[in-house]
Image 1 (cartoon, rainbow, N blue to C red):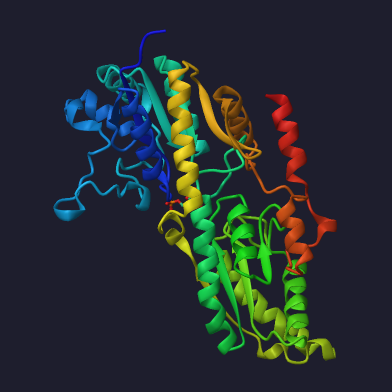
Image 2 (image 1 turned 120 degrees about the vertical axis):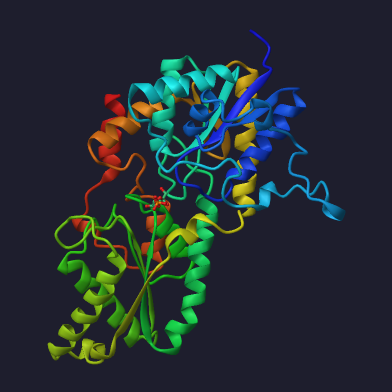
Amino acid sequence: MTPIQRIGILTSGGDCPGLNAVIRAVVKCANRRGWDVIGIPYSTDGFMQVADGQYDPEHLRLTDHGYDIPGILQGLDVLQFLSGTILGSLSKSRFDGPDQMAKILAGYEKLNLDALIAIGGDGSLDIIYDLAQRGGWNLIGIPKTIDNDVPFTEKSIGFNTAVQTVNSALYDLTFTAASHDRVMVVEVMGRDAGHLALHGGIAGGADVILIPELVPNLSPLVVTQICQHIADLRQRGRKFALVVVAEGVHGEDGKPKHLIGESLATAIADRSRTLCQTGDTAYCDMDRVETRSMVLGHIQRSGIPTASDRLLASAFGRKAVDLIAEGRYNRLVVWEAGRVRSKDLSDVIATVRECHLRSICPSPVETDSTMVKVARSLGIYVGNPDTLPDPKAVIQEVSAMV
Ligand code: F6P
């Protein structure tokens, strides 16, 4: 095995809290082994810029002491506290045609890297895996995403901090909601997965949590059931309600809907009035239901990385370096049953591609998962179990095929 001298690291796809903590861990572990670490700016774009001579590779070297702050804070190791990524990222690491691909491969060659660590979500890892196959790169992937939808890993970098952000937002909204007896509808990110909404919603004390795996679209039945749930809460003395809806829940027509939270807030207000008009005493004060909606948005991608994300980042960074030291390439670092492990990237990417082809989420919330059961047991409305598709069965079918 040729001794490692120099490895590269890049961040790809949407940013999330904890990326810098991974970079920090990789640099520390690699430097201790005597390896150089080259930080690739803006994911695959960085390789093209290197090929074009825009960067002196020596200026891309990251060191344990490369982030010193002047004055008495000199040497302060800030990276684990900072969100975003010091390397920059690309939303989509896609390259445009064979010329760009050739340039990326040439940039990689020019850097003389013995291996590359790519921190990315399913989409960007797919693209970088493809490049690695073509260029014969020694690739290690580290999963990151607030959506927590990378298959084969229970945890991804950034998810825990995003859950904390949703949790804090719900806490902050509780008091204004209670002061005005309002129904607050909070739309959260997650793409087509409901992990963030489910975990953040349970932690933050939501009364209703809608995730695509359990409520694929806002049918009239679902809206009615939500209003019935709110009416029940009101009768028992809780005059306000917190409703969390994942952005992946579709509109009534089954199609993706921009500002789904706003649509839901309007639908709840309208249906509440209709229920009141039925004359049924259970709904007698539902004409007073007032709703407000907010989109939590990109604030979920920022925030101070939680201790849990920093620990995961440290453990994932170390594992990536260890895999390189062992010469075990083409692996994705994962969290499984309380341990850091690694999986064959080819299997992971095959599953991702098959799921994308079928337009299904590669790692959805399992409808019988502990957290779904917890939500139901706590009396949170998460949809009616009798009328639900089972995404786990579909994923199992896909995994069996690849
Ligand atoms: O995948 C992470 C994510 O934040 C999703 O939750 C969200 O749908 C999407 O990225 C937003 O992407 P952009 O930053 O391109 O608007």
